[in-house]
Image 1 (cartoon, one colour):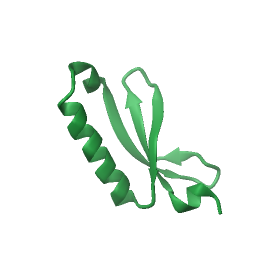
Image 2 (cartoon, rainbow, N blue to C red):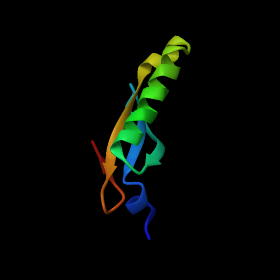
Image 3 (cartoon, rainbow, N blue to C red):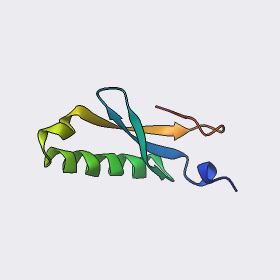
Image 4 (cartoon, helix red, strand yellow):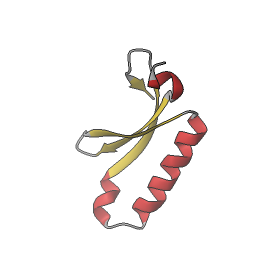
Length: 68
């Protein structure tokens, strides 16, 4: 079975300059949203450079591409 079927939600780190990195994949949207909340909380306690990033939850499509 394809991994995207087991974990159809992904968490993306998006930087202000447009760079995007997949942080992880989750089985449910709520699980992915909890991960985003933890990442944002950690970033708030970090140096100011981390303020130039955001975290997004996207659904993984059948072809492996995600969307918001």
